[in-house]
Image 1: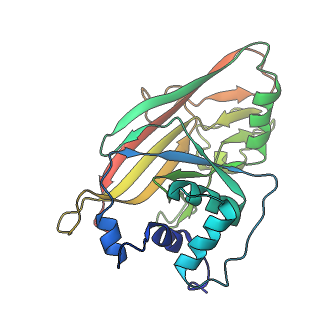
Image 2: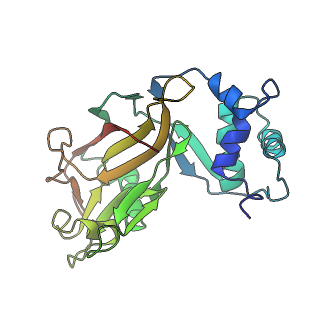
Length: 267
């Protein structure tokens, strides 16, 4: 089954392959190290469709088919269109700026809602998305970002990792924490309140290349923890969440912030 299905791993292998190189290692060594890491978001399409790649056991044939379906010549565009073809999704650039081995906390942007727009369609769309548990899906340097959290109150080793993370959580009018709000009930506890996850802590694990025959470093994993914060860079614990009352009419400004941490991995 694993040999026949087109996975992100064998597609990444295929897209880096070239007839000019006899082995993948040769091709990999020709890729120059880079300091900027791109952060991209995936927006689910309403009209998703799936193409069956199960009949292609050769990665080169799978790539050729993806190229044909995407009508593209750019490797990066092929990868983005490949996600469209297989998963029915769209890859979009983001405002998050990450430089390799540069830890920081920064603001990506701020969104203002005036008295005229705070009850409007756009903010209502976010509220409805929170109640329906809509999920973000991100890619950093062509690697899916995972959200890992503890699923047992008695066993800290019982961890679940997902490639999607929620846009927020909701506490209903009875004070019942819904969905992700149950993870931190002491913080997300106001009745009839939407907590938008406007801050993300991104941990990037990398292999530093020591003892290897290639230059630079290699990204091993990208993990993320979403939070609702009024000012995350001044309050890293996010003890003051950014709550939006269900019937609120006062203007608000939502800061979208992010923290980046780099960690050396032995794997």
